[in-house]
Length: 69
Image 1 (cartoon, rainbow, N blue to C red):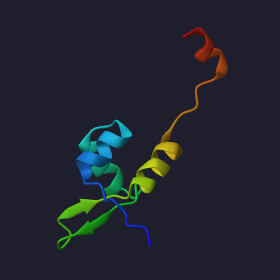
Image 2 (cartoon, rainbow, N blue to C red):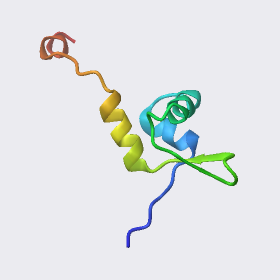
Image 3 (cartoon, helix red, strand yellow):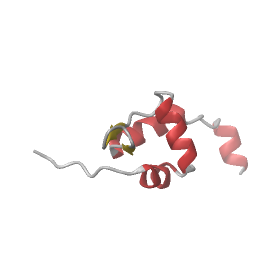
Image 4 (cartoon, one colour):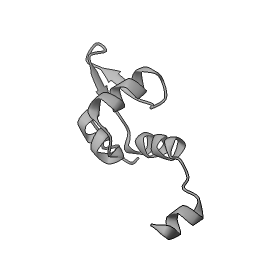
């Protein structure tokens, strides 16, 4: 069985290149899957869940815009 390296909010924010408040807000709203531990006081996130959230939240850039940059 593979062991999961859990991320704290700071680690999840660094992985997604967003702020910690953004990670916590998205988790509270149910958009980013997270787990509360220690009586609901501490958030933890799986790297795969953070990656999935990034993919769902990303806005595709049209090819023409990418070429002119």
